[in-house]
Length: 215
Image 1 (tube, helix red, strand yellow):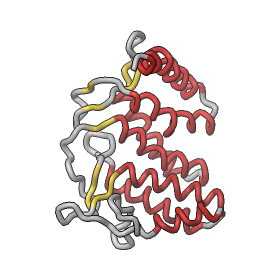
Image 2 (cartoon, rainbow, N blue to C red):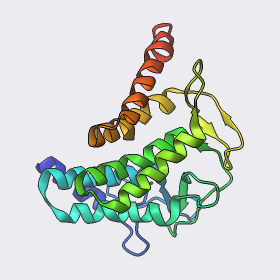
Image 3 (tube, rainbow, N blue to C red):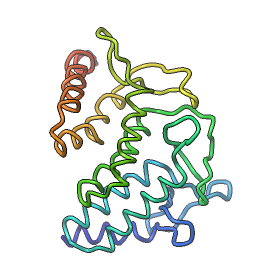
Image 4 (cartoon, one colour):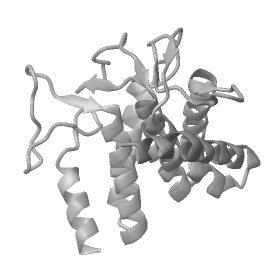
């Protein structure tokens, strides 16, 4: 528990009390590092911070950590979702403005965005978290999943408007399991998520493992 408290206390220093969310680039003391005079807040950082603070709350019962997790998620909900084309923006500035709204949307970002949301729902059963979890999950299923019996799996990335989708990867496959699909199955017992888990496992065994063995 002391280690958990120590880690959580450090990352609380990275919280932006004015605009919400957590800075991504910080030094060993927790002070923000500016790039070109700008302090960035990465989507994945928000989700991982929400995950970490939620787990810290579950281990300690300290509700301050739960409030910190909520701040990270609220920043995501308010600023990181592309309400026009769907999917999550990768990087935002301090105020929540997307840094590059026209850049590709990666499976890595789209999967990891759901990590903190799924964990928060597990701990609190907050209906708003569930709605966002489903919004992100359905976007992944619609935009990234290739439902081809021979080549099924999540594409590695899509263009900002999803008109182009390319490649498969370790992150697109394995990170889907560890960030949200396994949680969804364990929390709901729904066979939809079990089926997706089995398909992803099959991809790992048939496509990723043989590649690793050849390296």
